[in-house]
Length: 242
Image 1 (spheres, helix red, strand yellow):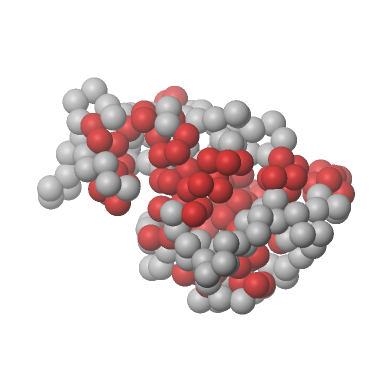
Image 2: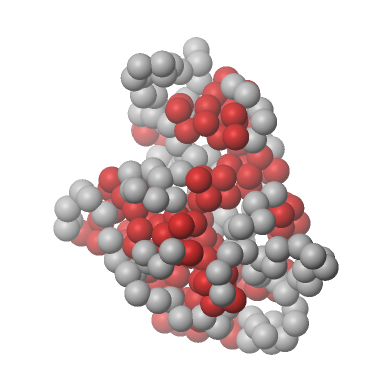
């Protein structure tokens, strides 16, 4: 969990770039997304793997104009803070390509009606949002125009940086997960950060019960969101918990 000193360091590192015009300028006629500047991105993820480049993130964001591109300026900033806080938690500040806990690697094959897993493949978490489960890899590949390629070769999410970023933003924008609305809508429609967490990992962090690990994980996401919101000069809003 971020402590106060680290949160202060993050803010100090970006004091010069917030509100200084350092954010990328939108093209005329295009939807105005709020994007962090390179300096802000570097301060948030100073030890990230080179795989997770700023350029790759910006390119993937451009494929989803509504991502941090709807509502007031405050809503757009808040959505970006919420997204980056969640991927920081999920991917260990962009230092994880693949889920660390190898004991879980065989636990993500759901075989319901019309569902199956490719022979020899594992569907554990990969990429910025740690995409998991066979049906999610299939849906992501279909949404990205790859057909069954990610289902047949899920590790491509950990080898292809463009696809890794795209799967993270795709999930954020479109996937309810255990919740009732996608994380994007949770922020844009005012349901709050807690509902965004529910869309990502609600079965464990929202609905499991008040045990200590659950409380720690949710508190960590909320603290990151508060810090990132402060960096982007926006109030975090209501509904932080789920």
